[in-house]
Length: 274
Image: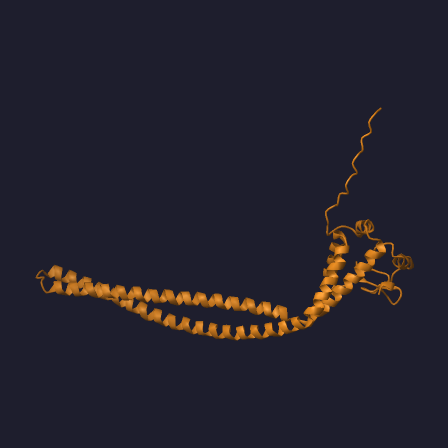
């Protein structure tokens, strides 16, 4: 008796998500799921509803998050510039210290040469020593000028540093105020936002990755972030307000298919869900 060998069931191979894929392939993927199409459409509607409420909360914060981020960036830049100016001042002070040591060396050499002048009778050596003394005097004068010029530069840099510090203090206070304002708004809406985020995550968990990718892509591409809309005024897309054909309206009402607006690309759902 010939033995029968069972062939293992072929596992389903998921195609990689492509942001450029057609809505035809998305519709096919949408229908191929453990959830019914109607349940997935309802879930998409609930997801959009949660996201819209979260968007309203974010709008309450207005430009505050961007302003806080801009102030933090400016403060970091001011601190960096202050540190750079301080480093320049430190280097200038080291240059002055080096110049003072150099002056002391020149004076020591001049003093030594002057003592030698008292013991020299040869006119050629006398002239040579005087020449060396003149050179050392010139080098000392150069070091003294360097010190004076550097002190002037230090004064200018200190003024710049004070301006930076004053600006930094003002901006730090501005940041403190903006953060406090933002934290107050966040605290007032934190509970509601947490509930909405939990609802959003619950909906997102029921939707396959390909559909979620398309949903997020549509939301990012439209100004009001509405990826899922109903029918407006009985015959138009609730997103772009273009007329929907009777046949498409029947398909939307049937809850058996993912319908994409051919004009704006939004997902159109049965008005009954609303």
